[in-house]
Length: 185
Image 1 (tube, one colour):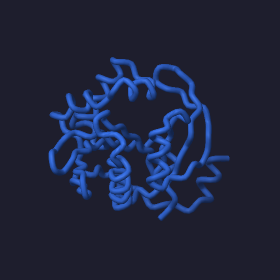
Image 2 (spheres, one colour):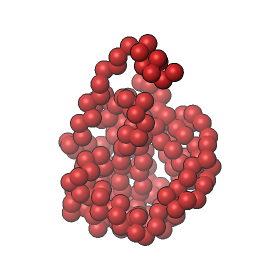
Image 3 (cartoon, rainbow, N blue to C red):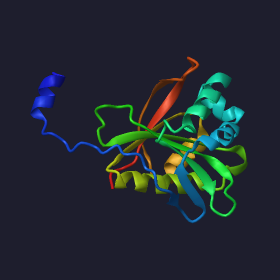
Image 4 (cartoon, rainbow, N blue to C red):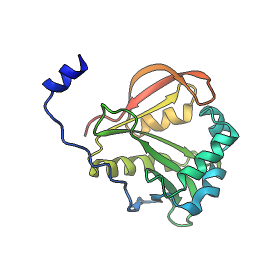
């Protein structure tokens, strides 16, 4: 049935999945691709609550920080304050659904000291605008229903809830999850 649907569906324009290599500047933030020198700051920004809500082990957290800050991962960005260059957090894009040709799923975290300042909402909006320039127009995110901070950011950034389902974390924990999508612009 899928093969028949592919035959009957007109071909879509192929996405240019070229990494965003330029710097995104907002009123208070500088968002740039992560670099090898960022690994310690990436690791330090993953607090115990971020580790727990994502189901990461200490080993997973260290591996993730090294991978994100490597030259081999062009789809993660460091969020920094413009005025002090302080490391605020990380934004990332993943292309996990092969049927969502012009879309991605995004994730993020904010270091403890920089929460509740609106930084992530500001970064999210600028990031999504920049993704659209790369013809990435479908933007989705998933989080646990218990992750109140992320739920608030999703709503503030204009994402709509599109469904609920169980999600399995890397440590095997199954949680109630919420899927979000940014409405087409």
